[in-house]
Image (cartoon, rainbow over all chains, first blue to last red):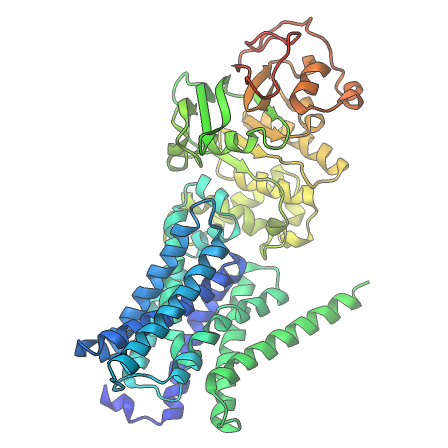
Length: 288
Length: 289
């Protein structure tokens, strides 16, 4: 893995940004059209609780200071939160958005408590990531292992979506029709939450907890403005995501080096969305 | 196509009750619908219509009594197929980025099998189903460009493409203009004949569904059935809906209770002690008018 660490940091950043852009763009179509954007936000914030738990455990168990183990704990925490959101909202008196709101702040609070215990109570600052890198990402400090993890997960996520494409489209369009027609909708929902959690863990590296949900919303939101055909929306979302992420990072690596990479990525994606919004608005006005 | 079990009625419900948190929503429902019949379930908002549809679709379990659809418990239906579902018209369905053809093809997702992509044969089947609902020219159009009535016809095509024995429609004409409603009901009548379908329609608007129905089940927690929709009287409707239906009277050509001729299907219910139910002048249970 060391040979990967020898590559120029800019190339490593671009190389890890590509799979992140691809999987976020694909999943964002389901997140936006199934109206799961708030779930994405809840699960991404839960990632803060997960990585903080791994950091705390790392004080006693050396293994938890390894990036792979930390990623595993973060993913598990995200999945558990996603499933808890589903469990809470099955009760009629707790709506899905309330469940997300509750678990989102609980996970953030837990994250703050775990980090504070390691740093201030135990007085141990070794292997503790900075608050800035957790909140806003640290794409320019990518290791070979991060690269490998991102590509493996990209293959898993994209492969799963490709194999279950028609089932996921049907589930996203209307859950009841899909269930009556015999599709395993509960399993598809859990699968989407798991894919979402895994994607968030990978994307956290790029943009951090605060902005990761932007990657899961903006590509598809932009594409959805431009087409009324699901397959075209998927293709346009991929284009918007890759252009936005790679373009934003490219800007950061060249002319905007003093700004956080996550912020330039999100703002580039936002600029693409604004352009699409304005263009479709103009086109609508010109229609007789 | 899934054949119903031999000699089984399309729907058989015996003394079925259902409650949400101990609050009764459906009470002691007994009803039989034979294959090929059309049943309209009418009732005011909150009468339990959607709950009954959910039970028939296998979406809700935990009821007391016996319920069988195509000879099987409803929760087994998704596994065996045979029932097509047409939901209430919603903006979300119309604004989803799908072409009409793609929306219909989704009805074949289970038949094609997990992991396998759609094939040309699926596209052809979707085109045929769209042709059956007179929407073949709109196959490549996005759902957003279709009217409310056309979106509902696409939903019927999606149900038909899987070759069901029965269609269950939940408030199919809500949000559709008058002309669209009439066309929709006329088309449904043609499809029923052509494919030999059993049709169950839920509506709060008797005007749209009565002309097509062999039986009307008036639901307001309990069930009050008529094998002959034209025999529904104003008194019954007033007690059911708690409003004046005189404006509807001419439209339906409603009669009194002087035509007792029960059809092959039947349904019975029992008075709700607190809610509206048939009064002293109401027809006897058993479906005759």
